[in-house]
Image 1 (tube, rainbow, N blue to C red):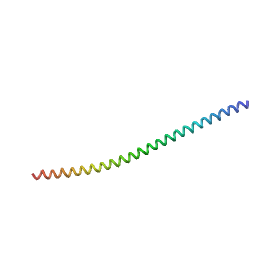
Image 2: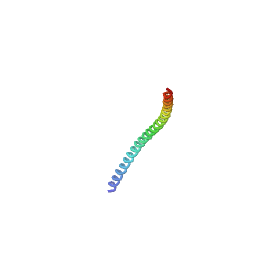
Image 3: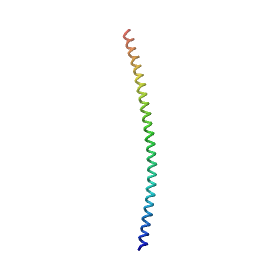
Image 4: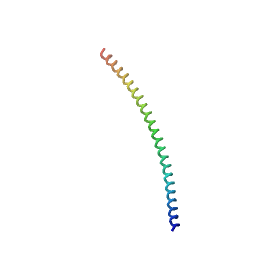
Length: 83
């Protein structure tokens, strides 16, 4: 009877050890996935910042070009009025 209890206890300990090893393996896998997700998020954040800077630069250039076109248009209107 005592050997049955010891055998059952040994089986439970082995099961716990196996379960613990599985949990460690899953934790390592999840940590790797988390690192990959963090790296991807960092790249996307960097890209977003770069795109925002480019957009602001383009907006400034377009405003400048539109301002120059407005000046040309108003000069053309003055020239047409002189005729």
